[in-house]
Length: 200
Length: 434
Image 1: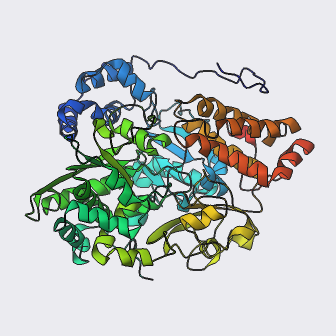
Image 2: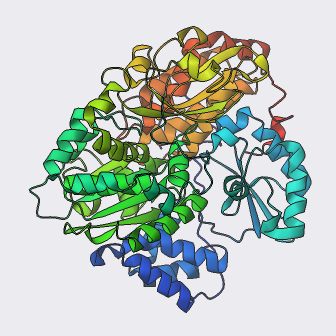
Image 3: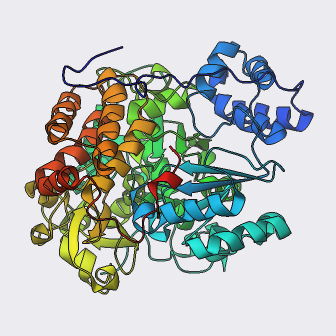
């Protein structure tokens, strides 16, 4: 712990949020995932297999939805490093989930340009519609809500990430429609999505 | 002026290999491969091309510093981890003009003697990565990437490497660490990447927009490039306009263009949303000092913005109108820096959280007058005390807002509430569950 001479220290300071991931169900990569991983490993020098660790984690997350401790062991075996190395990486990057998340992960950008265009209200509306706070998942496992940092599409603020894609220029009144659309049509319910706008 | 980097961003299928080669694509590569690597470096040096990632360092010099006598392999790392709040230009280039980037990577590899370029793309750009991978495969099949390119004996591969959510990975040594499969934390410099970078090998790390400027320089010559824009600020530049402007977006212009033109000209930003009064402009991504409305008649160049006391940085221009509470804006940004600090250096890891707590306290109306000076004290203790520029970046929003808008901080303390609760913010802070 370090100190600033003029700073008062309450309970809010210096509380580590570190926690171990759950052990989770048994995990083994599919053959297809292993083949993809070997292809990605071949992009790096043979002795630098660890460079593929993020790719290995993405594959595990795609397969299981999150990174459990068992998944970390499988990643370690595939990358030929220790589980401590894997946990080191998993706990650093924000895009790996260490507990199960919903089928649709809504990520509202909260950084300045989006906030200037009403992102706080979009989050509030989604909270009201889903009945959950940021960081939580609905009991039926359909939706998770997160506030995330700048997604790099500030000209189309506010941006809401839906799994791997973006829903842009989102305003509070559209939030309910977004949720309804996802419930009814899955990813096809993304109107105003990046893909549709760019490829039109 | 003709657009150089973004002429076809709105053309359907403007991103495809077919389209690119019909526009004379990959001819700059053919021309560069007929030259020696030294000649290519000299051309880029003569053009005065400065890095578009934020620091504005001359690209030719960066390539010249790469240790060519080293027996180790050399690498080009393209920094596509575009994460600076308010910046989204590389995203447009990669999505709508990927082959220009590939061509730039290939010429850069030729210049420094590398056989592999890695494009480190941020994890959130999944849909951009899909475009890059698909177009890479086409370019490979067409023989522009791979072995014996154009029959010159030049072998070169380009790979896309996806990050996983870390602002810090945009710092060049942290990017290298992340590429090596570790946490994205910066390294102590020296040694610089030019001597010991990726896998301990000589490496040049260049921004996407920087590399995209290389093919036009080879095609049209360094004089053409240098003549476009003010002295030492040559070439086309992409500007990212966001916030309270009528037409947010990515705009290409030579660096003669003024900040005022960018914000008010109908060709660019088109003025302030709802014709309100302009309050403050962040000219180069969230990490740089604020410019006030009377300071906008300056060229939006590296040197022009620096002369006004700020930085062009990544040219992410965030515009704020008179409904914006500057304490709230600073709190918003400090949450970002608190969240994204990689944790390696104590002043940034601890100080960022302190600053955010103090700002939150003042914004909620629970602050005291002495907290304002405490903010300055903490911020000044972060300034210059960290391995990378992140620390300075975190301290800057606090220092600049307190310096320019101190009366607003004092009003928050005096009245015990936020004095500018705009209708576009959350109806109640209680809803934002932090």
